Length: 356
Image (cartoon, rainbow, N blue to C red; front, side):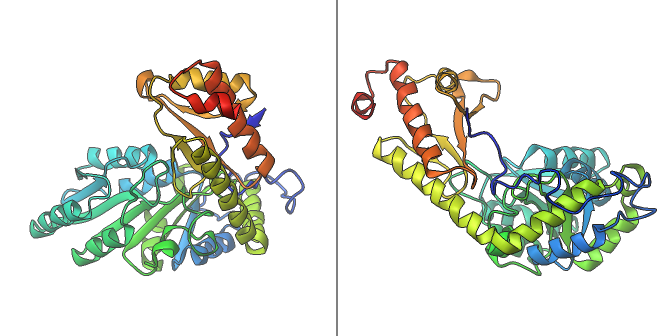
């Protein structure tokens, strides 16, 4: 079975024995009492990678955004959230709303609309927070992060990014959106999971040294929840060591596989969205039921991602490509797609008979 569902974009898996051993999974104490061994050094390295002054570790982005927005929320704060922002950040925003913050939405990639909204917030003497994803797979037009950061600075606010998709994949050395958009030093706080690009189930909150001191002094999860396990911290240390040694090679290989996939689909007159990012979503095919195509690909030993969102008629199908896929894997996946489409007997695809 060929798997195109894993978001381990660089192919990093950290099997047992790949890093240094740990004496215990947990110290049995919250981070507010004692930081786990290696956590402070790892946080410093992650901050430097992202172009930030400081960082702190959390068990997940759920912990991170629940905690962060709970602290940032107070009457007089207005959170401007971009349409399509990932669910976990939105869950944190819901907590902020329950604690008295106002929430306003703006359209995806609409920098002018955000500017008008921010000016109104600042004009009313309210505190501005702008929230969006650093990168959103499947969106043809990505957010103008640099303009958002400039808007936040101009109106005395702060930009909060969920940079999970970008960290490890985009930007210089895989440093993510701040590196990619050259906005280091802007009023930005970055929350990201390492579970995708670096293959490690922990999260990092990064920003200015003052902002991180403020967060750590008030954080509720650092008091009431377990910190990242020693195993996760060691795996993250291992991931960053690999990133220094061969990260650029892995990102180049990943890009090569994505381009191969898109080129082979284009030769078959099939379109997909995703640009150069590893998540490649097939464009709608008239008359083709995507759940049926997903099932047909499984019969051909290719596992893909079906985005149903509760509405089968609007389902999308994605191939998630990683650096672990070979050129032969891509060729086999495309051939399986051709055969699966042929099995659905769609006469409007005359190229299928020739290609198969």
